[in-house]
Image (cartoon, rainbow, N blue to C red; front, side):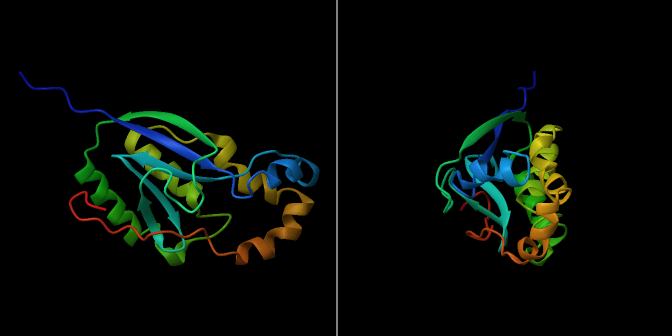
Length: 165
């Protein structure tokens, strides 16, 4: 009899890039309290999209420190080998470093894409809808030129062979 496939937990790390400032100021300016950078935790590593393209580190090992919240996305049967091949293909296509855009292709769109691949589930819409909600406000429209010029958060470029960081 065949053994059932191994299940690997998948988590979403959510970071407040402003360390609380946006949470306090955004209701006044945008009517929202939500802000964040996200990453996916699977196979004992943290994967995210930033200035160098797809990056990885030990969980909580980014310059942002520990996440502000952790969302359990479920489990995956996708092996580490298949997942790393998938990430490599994403890094050569949709999520190249030069493809980054603050509002349209960012860490949250990456996390959403990877979550769907691993679990069949999207990340919460309050995260993925945030850019369009911000841009729908007068303040967001005023900030758009400035925010579009910001470099994305960086890190160690994803480069692993056979699961080794």
